[in-house]
Every structure is written in C-alpha cells, then in structure tokens.
Length: 190
Image (cartoon, rainbow, N blue to C red):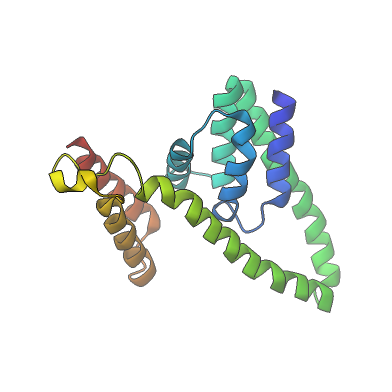
C-alpha cells in the first residue's frame, strides 16, 4: 500500500502543472483506486486544504495517505507528491537560465498557460457537484421550500458572494473563506 501511495502521488506530482487547484481533478481521479473517499468527502478535503497552511496537493495527499494507511501512508503520499516537484524544479531552474530565450521554450510555456486554465476549470466541475447539488441543502431547516430544490441556492449565493468579494473587491481570500465557513456553520446548524 505504501509503495502504491508513493507511485500514485508521484504521478500527480509529475503531472501537476499550475498548482493545487489546477490538479484537483487529477488528484480525485488518481485516488479512486484506493476507494476510501467519496466526491463529497474530497470536496471537503479540498475546502479544508484551502484554509490550512501548505499547498492543496500536499494537504490532500497527506489526508488521503492517512485515511488509506495511517501515519505511514500520510508520510508516503506526502513524499510521493513532493519529490517530483523538487526534482523538476532543480532541472528546470538550470535549463531556464540557459534556454530562456529559446522559441521552443517560450512556445512551451505559452501552451502550458491555457492548459492550466483548462485544468482549473476541470477542478471547478469536480468540486461544484457536491457543493451545489448536495442532497442536504444549507438552510433547509430554516426554509422548508429549500428541501425540494435540485440545487442548493444558499451554496450558490455563498459562491457568488465569495467570487465578488475576492475578485471585484480584492478582499483577503483567507478572511473570506473563514467568514463564509462561519456563515455555513451557522446556517448548517438549522
């Protein structure tokens, strides 16, 4: 199991361009063979990883590894996802200095940018389903009419307000996440 965790998370580490949110779908698809985490639980892990220190990929790897094989699994998965970054960064740093003006390198980087945007969009799709189409709607205990809806309107409002606060008003993402989490906690009690 430990070797399997290292191999799976090494693959994620080698293929994970664009940061944690860009590889959320890759992480979710890759951990399906462990069968320990549902899509809803995974969305929760990503949400928690966003408000805890460290990269999303590392935090997620640590949690999945722990859930799959305890403390040794957490260490194996974390090692697996981090090792490729160290290797690739060392190699790339040497090569970028030498080949930074190469049209081939410039073209490669230009191609990676839109691919990264596409990967982030895939993360949106992966995380949207359990957040917006959840069986348990936020505030369903407060407003009876919310229970029969196919989408969770309170989650949609929280999502839109978060986008506006961070995107338009440039509010601190950490503060906004904590604030929205508190609102969700208060509404979720009812």
